Length: 121
Image 1 (cartoon, rainbow, N blue to C red):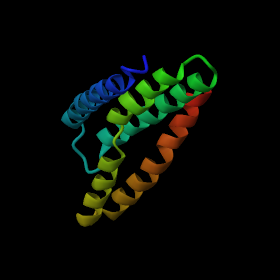
Image 2: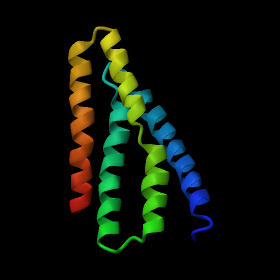
Image 3: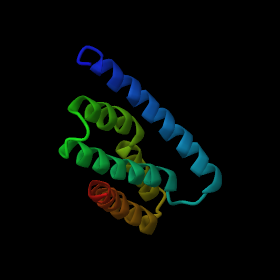
Image 4: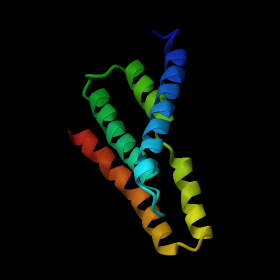
């Protein structure tokens, strides 16, 4: 597996990014408000799954190469912290201060709580 590990991580990163895109488009079809729900939801799911992967790896259920494939590859492609930051800046520039502040607090806090929940499952 070590020879193919970097390739598999990259491929899973592409799969994660594709899943992010599909979920983003789907949510934006139904949610058309100022709060960027699609990115928030994606990062919430990614946080939970990262916690789950960490727990499985720590418990010995998931080998290190698979942890890298799932956490670094798939979840690295799926999650999108840089988009969240960009959306916060955009909200501030549009003078939507309460929404931007709420999004900032929620985007920093909720994925951490989700990761903890995933770890405890």
